[in-house]
Every structure is written in structure tokens, then in C-alpha cells.
Length: 76
Image (cartoon, rainbow, N blue to C red; front, side, top):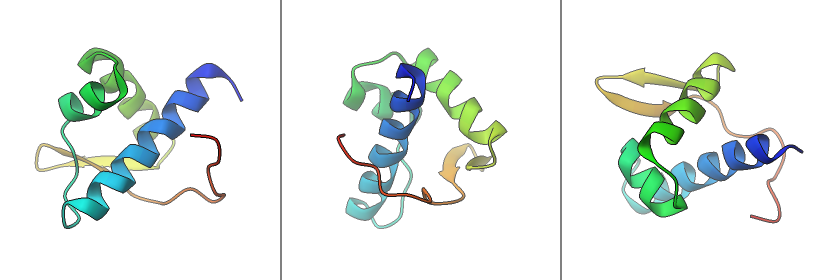
């Protein structure tokens, strides 16, 4: 797995965990960046990759996952 793919999956895991803790709400891009120690601009690029892959969408100004990973993510 490339470093970029690993970061992408790390973002997915963070969003899923955040949603579980916050009643299904999605974190902001800034919250994702702060939690993972990366810039909001970098999160935006990863978010667009997830959208391009059909794994996420934007709706009402929020970023939402549209599917869960097909395989468990280990080592994060």
C-alpha cells in the first residue's frame, strides 16, 4: 500500500470513528486535518480522491462517506 493510500484509509477510519462518537455527524475537513496532523488543503485532496472513487460525497456543505471499507483496516 502506498503512503497516499495509507493516509486515505486513515482518513476513512477517522471519519467512521468520529461519526460513531458524534451521533452520525461527519467531521469538518479542518477537524480531520487537526486530528491527523495534516493541512486542510491536504485533506481536501484526499477527500476528492474518495469522491472520485465513489466512496464519499459532498452534501449540504458536508463531506460524507458513502460506503464502508470492504476489508478491515489494520495497523492504523
